[in-house]
Length: 152
Image (cartoon, rainbow, N blue to C red; front, side, top):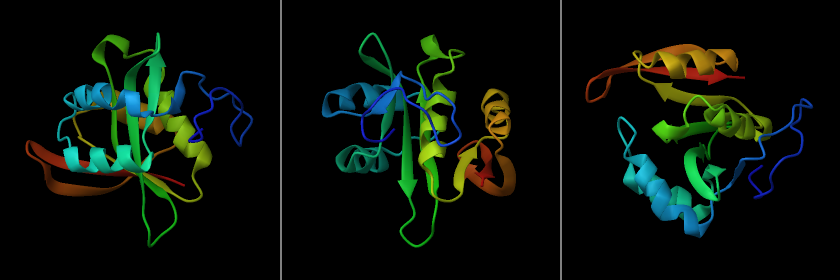
């Protein structure tokens, strides 16, 4: 899915989300707007992801309404999902699931992410995709701990 294509089938035969594609230069301003919905955004990391072309977007009417920023670890297999956000007006439409599935389908090792323990909706989604809590990082967020989840 990171090649900019839409649709198709993942490695397990599931249909991939046709609303998900690689981010394009024209999406950058909208992605920066979406980043404001995150608990702890990292502007430098996002700019790096946009520059190297690793970000994925979920689109509605040609406009990015969600994005996911995967980060490969150079010294180990797998990928870390650094940022994931969907515009509040487009939540509960399967967009986060579609973005996650695109990365999971392409991953060659474990997929990790971090979530706030009070984010029940996100934790439920991650659990449904076979992520499991593997660690708790004290004071990772300004307002408390973070759970580290892993799949694979």
